[in-house]
Amino acid sequence: MFEFGRDLRRLFAQAREGDDRSWIELIGADLLEAEARGQATDAHRTRCREPVLTGLKASALWREHARRTGRRDSLARALSAASDAGQAAVTTDQHIEAAMETALCLMLQYEQRGGADLLQQIDLVLDGHETGRSGALSARLAVAHARLEALKARRSGEPAAMLDASALMDSALHDVANRPDLAPEAAEVQLDRAALALEAGLLRGDTRLLDQAGRDLRALVASASPEYRPVTRARALTLCAAGLSALAALAGDEEARSKAHELFDAAADAFTPDHSPLDWAAIELARAARDMNPDLDRLIEIETVTAGEGLILGAVARERRVAVEARQAELGRDAARLARMETRLRRRLATGQASENPLDWAVDQITLSQVQLTRMRLTGRGEAGHLGLVLVEAAETARDLGAGLIADRARALLTMVRQTFPSSPG
Image 1 (cartoon, rainbow, N blue to C red):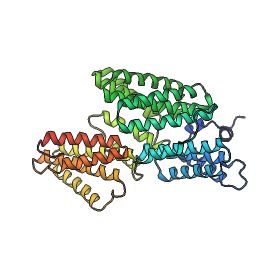
Image 2: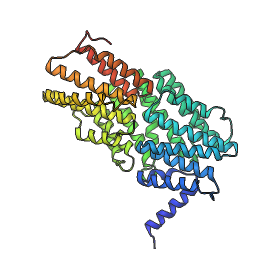
Image 3: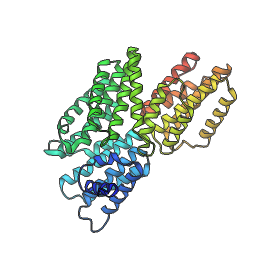
Image 4: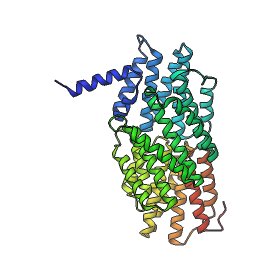
């Protein structure tokens, strides 16, 4: 007689012993954490027969948990497990495996929190390891180098650099695309390459690049089964929706805009906050951005999910929530509500709540400026002279950290200040 629970446990036990990590997409964040703890415990047992391999598996599990939840402690555990594997390594291949895992952990740290020196640190970790080796290890190493160049290109904000990095990713993808054992690596390259094309297309206003990214993402969606690769599928759907939405905006195409909304909804249906909290939050933020009147309660929920870990996504969520709340107060001509918001933000800055995190400081300055500007528009009173300088500094701080979305928001608000108060400095 078929017993689902026992059969499922047997399948997972077999998967743990192999190199295929695709089963990870099927489990929620809590079970993923339990699996990571178990693997890490095994790696530290004195009778562990393969401490390097077991340590690398533990690191990969902790890294995925950190990617889904944004938890600092999970990323720290991933880095520690990779370091332990590197110390236990004996062969050249084992040292390369440990270096790649460390680099992937640091890339995730950069993507989630930014950091002025992280990209250089990743360069040092990968430096000296050969990419001309044969087989799967060489292909994975080429992927790691290509993903690093993509991060550098996105940090530069230069479309030409993004296209160069995209060409490097094409080469890396060629080596992994037809290998079932490297399907996760292939998916990551496809997602990164599409994100590069989307960003470069938006910067250049190039519909060809946006369309190309859309085609690549649709192919990835088609190949990612919702039964076996739900996380990859939903992430691809989200990017696909973002690209189509950008195309619709450039072309003024209402039909494309409607289709983009459908894709966002399809991606949202694939996630719950307990399965992949940060993916859920990112999709919900994207959905909120398309609405003229976003649901404030939903934005508060997103902010709660992403708060407390120093995440760029959390900073974006907080900035959007304050902007929507200020807009509602302005529409309701509620100057008292704006005054209360301003008092809370000033108190936060005065008590140093954001002093340990430069990105939090930048967002606090942006949100305070947003509230002050809104109050001044509503009441016709107040001086805007200091806002320009504050927003320039906030934008530079965010850009230095690699938080382009926050920097862009500061620049957009700065433009609004200049238009509303032409004599303001900055």
